[in-house]
Image (tube, rainbow, N blue to C red; front, side, top):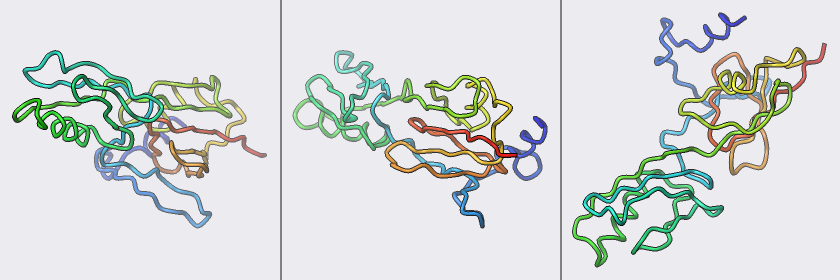
Length: 189
């Protein structure tokens, strides 16, 4: 069974990098793979490292609050929610160049992503830390694996900032994103 799951993760010629998931609906209305965001969007709970080169007092580590904001010395409140790290770099640079620094060079790095949640027919449901490139198979492994009652053909995911969960076929790899809530359903005999 494991070899079949691993074979499903491989792309053309057995190369996992060759596989490019897309959000397509199957005839049963199930999505076969999660949409893959080209650039991660920041949200509440993410932890950032901001480096303003040559200005150690303006650099530091910051966690985004419930609104996706954090406070930077001299500049004040920065809204990072829904933006990429690159967008935040540009916003900080623009604010610092308004009378504080000439040609500031800013770097933003994501230190910790917000967690994902998994429940249903897994052995240890709960909150788990997100890691880059997390797939459903890896998320289930973090939760101790499937129970004997688990439906291993379909999974339900409610994406962060969405109100409804969507069903995904497990015939192809499914990506889990930070803030997602994953539900593994029960199979019916």
